[in-house]
Image 1 (cartoon, one colour):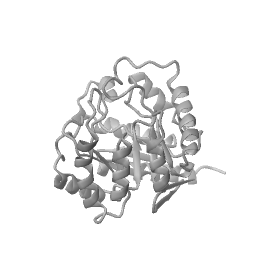
Image 2 (tube, rainbow, N blue to C red):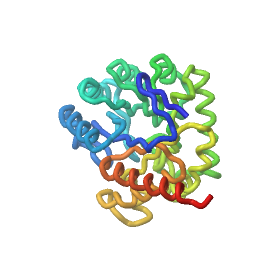
Image 3 (tube, rainbow, N blue to C red):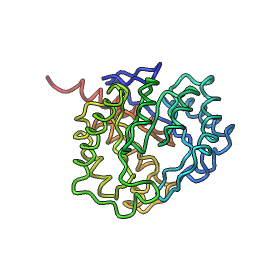
Image 4 (cartoon, rainbow, N blue to C red):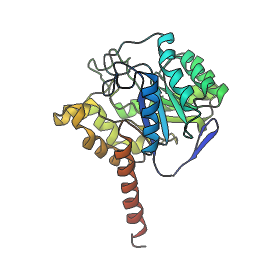
Length: 284
């Protein structure tokens, strides 16, 4: 299985990929305002690559619960200077975390290779046409509602069946827009329009969500469902997030989006070594 992102190609199975988060925003739930200045964001991104990030995800609009949208101009002002500075300094793919076709188009023109679309439940194909024309990688994330209201009592008859159906529908729509399946990664959207039970159900049944045959991306970093279960603040959620990450790896996830790159890389490499040794030592 391949994932093609313009000049980059990843072949699976392979060691899990780690995507480092760079939020160029004032209001993201964990690092909002820390890297709002482009120079600070670039420095942080370079540190994440040094920590082992295989990909960088640059976002200029918060998608935390309750977040309000920003204008195209504001989002471009935030992300373009960071992308333009990084393309000449890193050899890893750069992703733009956006729902806006105009931002995606400008970011790809500036050198980004991936569009991470939390708005993949869209009804129009303008952004998909842009991805198809550029040959870019595309991450289709499931989201019920929108960031401003997504945590207002989300409901599903069966969240796993719903997300699986969404994946299959998106792959059909993307193909109709000219996006090759090899460009697509699927993300169940942990924490996006889901309550604690929904998130646990999705993580517990990741093997079912693999059936469309595309790599799965999981983002659990510091998310509130762990606080709901364990009664801990975001600053205390690293261990819980790593536990979810290691579980998801064993269940077949291939890409992990995180604020905590160094710890995630170390944990994944250790888990992979143990899994490899366990499989090689099983009796014939």
